[in-house]
Image (cartoon, rainbow, N blue to C red; front, side, top):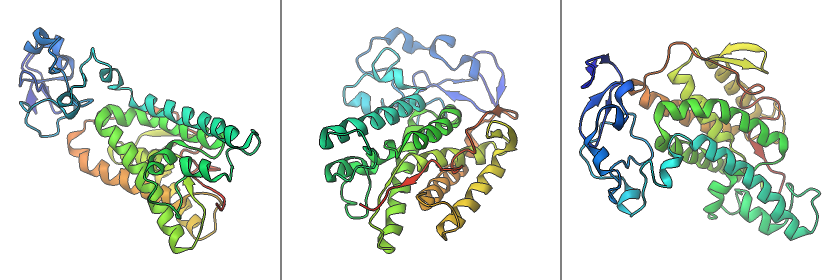
Length: 315
């Protein structure tokens, strides 16, 4: 337990201000709530309030360290700067990027083929090189990330969006926007790479796309940090998230052996979930989570009928 420098309240999740070096409770964490000297330097071009997206969660770093990488590059990441508006909102940024990329799939497909029919399932090599991570071309590094935001149909992106919308905001609040950004991108990319690695072994020429790896990583983090979190399966049946997670593991393991539905990136699901569980274990001792919290999850959550992760047909 640590004492707040302003009110003297005992807190087991203190906030350390990197600008004045003080320790504060949640109520006094903001600079204006503890009369931080940094308020006098609001217009400092050095970015006095830069936190590399969000330093609200203590990471054990020196609170007197220099500004973040973006500030050192001359990019204003403070509350008044353009990057500052993303702080606390990366869940919505990623959701917007998913839907914009989905629209771009149709625009590019139409430009290449002159037809809107079967655009998402386009076999045009340029379309595939932009949106799909394929075993034949793992060296196309951009597809490690564009494939995260691309999807194989409206139902596909809708299920992923539901999972990320409901669960992503919780995880972002727990770990901060910067770490959430890395978690989303790294887990999504590694999940896709894990899937195409299996495809290479199986001589499967298809590819993978979708945010299923990132969505399952988010669920994995929540399973560790708040295993009793109530999720409404199909918006009706309340189950703790740990039960849903175990169910997803079973479904995807069975799917790897051909007993599940086709076209589902089972390996990507399992890789993303494993990353989330591991990351949750890594941060669980420095994250304070409410004892009770209820949330209405998506239809079955990740891996429900159709699943949020999709494999593409042979390319």
